[in-house]
Length: 463
Image (tube, rainbow, N blue to C red; front, side, top):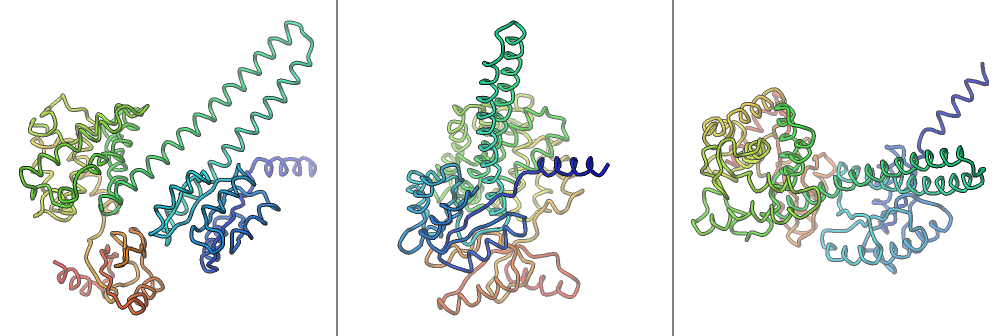
């Protein structure tokens, strides 16, 4: 009995994947300590080095899964170090940690060191967690693929040693088929995950370039999928809707700043004609990409209207796919919340009133009803009020609604970061040290009764 329990325990231990080992290289000790604590909280093993040379020595002694290196270091910068790390451990996943001003150096690192991805300092913990988990997953998938290759070679060798009778041939064919199916399945899963990760990164780039608040593309994708499921769309249509939600604004990247930065109802006739091209440009950018044809079609049609007065084709009624109708309502709702569609409309309540008034004209009334029902049932899906503030107004619990960038172009904090006493104190100290003033766009936290009056006063001052 005791022997059986030990055997079961050993088998369970073997089934669990080994803890990943991550190497961090940075000449700033606080950065290394912060990354080490971050990984320790997730049960990951870490190594740390304060220079490229020290990092190479550790690679000589340890097999690591993920390497994260700062770009700016004395003697040997991050791109040079990761290039040498590629020669020592080509199977390790390489990530470059950069400052806001180092973006141009990323291209060199991609070419020389074949990096997996990069991330800016200071980082957002949620984004850092997603990036490291993706890297660890990619490393494990590659290890599994190599393991299967070795296993396949080994089993094929054994097959060749068997007797050449008909029974041997049947067994050989069966094993080869099973192995081929296993390899295909693993490859398919890996490609699906890599594709999804690439879409997320592209959506983040679109949002950053456009300056939109609160992860606009990802929120549109998430809420659209929820409505699509309510309306019983097929799993294939749901996937296309998710992709279209992430990339629906990709065509906006080609428009001039003076068009992108105005509310739509403030555009001149000439500017409006330029603006109306973005959905066609978005479709053209994606139409030839494998697997994106249906999503690109939804992107083209997401500004069409039920009454036929939309663009680019003036389609109406049943000629509009359900996915395009959903995308139209959700995207416009989020833009209405922030005054990007109609300048006089701002905030969730006003946006919902507008959608209801336009139901059956501009929008599919069923989709409007589904969105409003979802928001009312789950108030947390709507963002809290956004106000402008200075560092003296900040209180713990507020969340950055946009990237905080210094006058010199340095990214101090990324949007979505929750403020607490320590980072508020650092921002105030930065103002003193740089003799400058920081203006922030923040989301107010849920206020307790004793802070309610203060929040109202701050919101009034910013109206």
